[in-house]
Length: 442
Image (cartoon, rainbow, N blue to C red; front, side, top):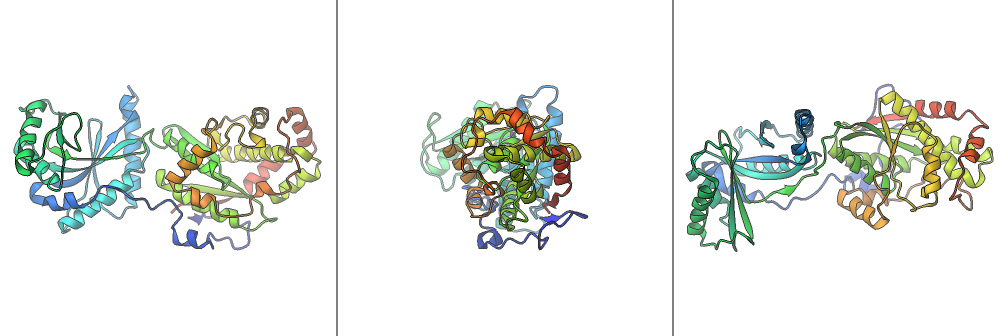
């Protein structure tokens, strides 16, 4: 991630160079994740049996009516963009409800080609809008070729199996039932495995398409949801804590392209919270690509609120100012909504009266995808996403500065407006938005 051209440098070094060893090494970015499917089966099958490839199954998009082509176009563009940084040349083709990813051999050995297909599958699994990712063998459109692929893929298998055959091309002369029986007989004869249609340990999927047949035995869940960008753009208030990264991910899954806004305590604190925000955005970027982080130095604004006599309303007054700043930034970025990690009743500022008072500060809608989640649920999701270790790193958060001894849990809107009336809050919000330094994911 690098500062955008012409961005202001509003902290000492102006460089994103995290000093924490875990951030430096990339261990806590959420970018490294394991996949249970091995390359062994596809590599051992060899080119004589079939061509390893990846099938991407659509989820919710498949249910869309006349707008479905638009969803599919955005998803295809997102997949191409995600795979563009994988270091593997990929050919994408479209089937009914399925995207097919093929990797040219270009002199690769069978094992190298299968490993490249694995990298493509792992990367594609992070793209919202895809329900399932399947490594498959692409074979000639004959029952014999499909049976040979099934035998190769189950060579190391044990226990009962079942064949699930499906014809997307109804002109194929062999029915799905007969094709499944033929392939099942070949697998049973080759490996001596029992058949169980209800409780198999291994399922062999056979899909007959217009020009070829795809055979595979497993798949991994995709992200599901909608393609990023389908629902517009949002500004996410990224605190560096546990909740806001999870909220951002949930909104990406609903098709929102997220721009991240972080408020640091500069010049009253060091840059540690910025390092965390940078690392969090880097980890979340795998779900949308091209992420942008904006950092606003908020320390002096907090001092202004404190000297205006905010008292017990200090936290609420500064949160309203943050929302106003986010709204001003959203206008510049053509974003139509704000996103926060609020969870009802989790802290003093997230009681129902206080949430109502926060909504009063801006005209844009504020989305709170975690509003009904408890902390255990949020932490479990953060752990799955890989953001939890980053969020738990120590830092000087601006939200802990100048806190009153006791925070207000039932703030009145009119009291907050009186505090804001002591200075031009809109002008201050615009100035804060203008001071934001931008960082883009390369």
